[in-house]
Image (tube, helix red, strand yellow):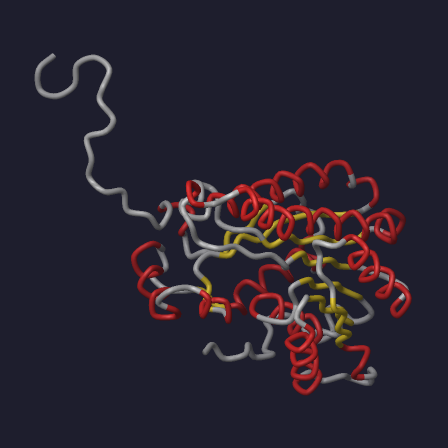
Length: 292
């Protein structure tokens, strides 16, 4: 099991006082850490996820660990059950947030999911499930937040993707969805610039979060993979991802839009985690070897 992230932050305690954020996938892992850090810096945070039990537990934990500084604890973190694949629930998420807080300054699209499989074993149902959860969900939440508030008031949007610079072997379906999100972010950073909206992406690498329990080998396999595939020779922490997201949300990130930040210890420079076995299945055209 992975421990819960701590509430420490490199940012000043009142940096986001008076601001309101929505963090999807906020009940566990990276999303929970982002919500926790935002709340500790004065932001009121709506966390959204499908699993109500985990969502409520995350809200209670964050409330117990954050200095409310005069705020009602129920205003510090507000959980809303939401399946981002369903438009009516997305609409409710944004509408309920505005009804309670009257504003949405930040949107962090963290919710998503993937499963490991070679593409020849991914059927249409599996492909569409990944697209609905990652791409369609991000599209619907982003568009609703834009029309409901940010079009007239501006805002910051950060999308959590994957390290897809060199493809994503064995999760090509998820890599395709996240690549689409990255392109969508770049496009909207131009289309919506006149509204005072910035859109950026954060691409986490091999991060030791609660999600590692879903993969064969668990945390130990993540450590082994990171030592072999990253320049940093270690895994990353959820706190490192959160701090990077908050940079884009902070005043320091005002002039940055359409960008992708890799929080991956240099993994994107070194290539995918897939060893190709020796083979002779790609015969050359022309002459190769010692004789010309």
